[in-house]
Image (cartoon, rainbow, N blue to C red; front, side):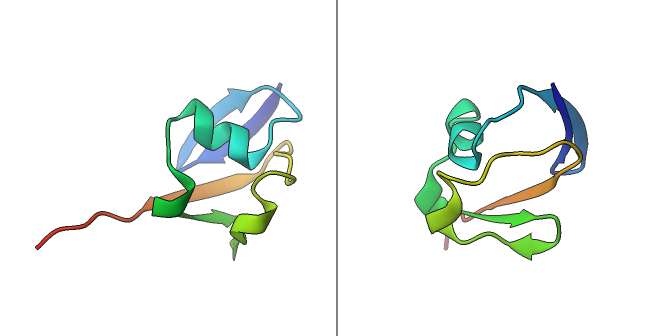
Length: 67
C-alpha cells in the first residue's frame, strides 16, 4: 500500500496504480480536470503511464460550467 495525500486527505491506495486508474476509481473524467502532482501540473499525456508513489501529493481540480 502507498500512503498519499489526495486533495488534502491522507489515503492508503494500492501501489503501482496509475493516475488514470485513480481517476477511474473516483469516476472523474480526464477532460474536465487538471492534476497537480507534488506541486507541478501533470500533462494529460502522462496520466496513463505515471504510477502513484508512496508519499505523493495529488491535487485534482474539476472544471465546472455555469452562468
